[in-house]
Each structure stands twice: as structure tokens, then as C-alpha cells.
Image 1 (spheres, rainbow, N blue to C red):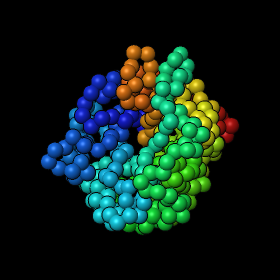
Image 2 (cartoon, rainbow, N blue to C red):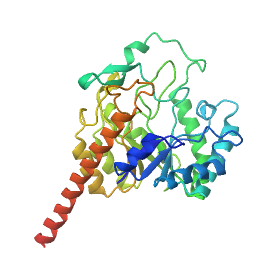
Image 3 (cartoon, one colour):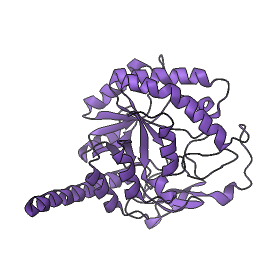
Image 4 (cartoon, one colour):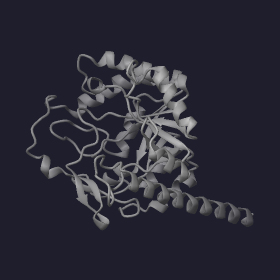
Length: 332
């Protein structure tokens, strides 16, 4: 497993601290600070990749994308957005960036009703309570059906997967977060492992796979080791968000990595058992004492804790696998 972290596109303290903790792989967004070129153009991507390389980090994933809401809603500008998306993927391939983590959540991205829920020791986490949405008004998109979103996803994939194949870029589709539908009249279709499977089967390709977001799929009630084995067997697991939660799709909260409902050591052992060698990052973390919660889920101290915890699990799982190999050789 390649231990990674999500970094800003310009160097900051986390770059140095994560490197000191043994992180060698970067997950980047888009360099939106570019003034004279689009952030998905070739040279901004190359310059961002080189900034990471100069700091000793390999840019393994981009977890962002150009504007795509018209693609998802199927409105008038979707073909223009798809053209930009195709160019973006072409530029990623030319820059040697191998994985794109993207989503198909229309109108709004990951969604929470609170970013100040108290967890262990008073740390702050995000949470979701679907009962608070029962009287929420529709967005300006009105009612958006699941059927329409599936049609639009297929339309998008039929055009974008061939571009990814040509560029050599793997498409890692992220599940909908929260995995519940609808929210404010906007349906969510990628709410389970079965839905992710249906999605990537729309346009079969070795470049069409998933981001295995443990937190979202655990919220959906999935058995994480089983999901890991299923998508690994197909070589469709391109990227991992390693996090955990407590609760159900109707009401859940995020947790410290060691304080949720998933057996995280069992999950890590499963990644090692199946031979997963792709990038994985801590994902959403609690805001800890002394931090201002200006960036919920992405403050510094919880991320450092998550990195250390994951490194410990990796060492334990690696040792377990080595012992199994030795035991197997002795049995022969």
C-alpha cells in the first residue's frame, strides 16, 4: 500500500510534517491559483507535479475535477463540460499522473448537517442527520431522479472512458456521501457497493474503477473486507480513503480512525492479503484542541494522528502476511 495524504497545490507545513512521518505519495487537487491558464491545462499540472517531486513526494492521484454539474444534471452545457474533462484527462496522462478520483454527486458534493459534533475528548467531527433535511427546500435544479442520473452517468462514461484509456489514466469513481437518497430533491445513485459495480459495468474497461471510501461504504452498512476482496479481484480498486464512522445513512458521525465501527486492522490485513499496492490516504479527521475548525475534516493534528495510526496498521498487516508466508513454506 502506498501511504498518501491530500496536500494543497503549494507547499505548506503539512508537506514537511507528512514527509517526516514517512509519507511519500501525494494526492492533489487542481492548482486553482493559476492566473493565466486553466488549472486543468498541461503546464499547471506539470508544475504542480514538479513541486511535489521537489519535496520528495510522488503525485499519485488528482482528487478534483473541472466544473461538471451540467454533466451530472444533463443540462445544456454538458457536452462543453465533457470536452474540458476529456482535455483534462489527456493532460493528466501527458503529465504522468496516473489516477483521477472523481464523483457523480449532482448539485452538491459531500454533505453534512454539522461540522461541530463532539467526539472523544471534545474533538470536533462532521455528522449527518437526515431528519433535518425533511423540510429542506429543493435546490434550483428541482427534482432530479435516479433514472436521469444513471442515464447521464452512462452518457458521460461512454465519452470519458475512451479518453482515459488513450491517456493511460485510471478513473476512480467515489461513492455518494452521504449514501442516502434523495437530499433536497437531488437523487444519489452511488450509495452501495452494488451501485458502484453497476456504474463501472456501464462501460467496461481496465481503466474504469473505484475509489474505495471505507467511511461512506461503512455508513451504507457494507462489510468492508468483503468489498475490498470483490473489487480487488476485478482489479478495479484504484484508490482508498481510509476512515471510519459510527451510525447509519440516516444519522452518522465521523470518528477518529481507531474509534469507529469498522475493524480497521482486519481491513488493513485484507488489503495486504489481496496485494493492494495503490495509494491510500487518511481522509476526514477530527479537529483537535487548539485548532480553529476552519477546514472541517482537514485540520492538521488529526491528519498526523491518522497517518501514524495507518502506518502502525500497515506494519502489523505486513508482519502478519510475512508470518503466513513462512508458515506456509514450513507446511510444505
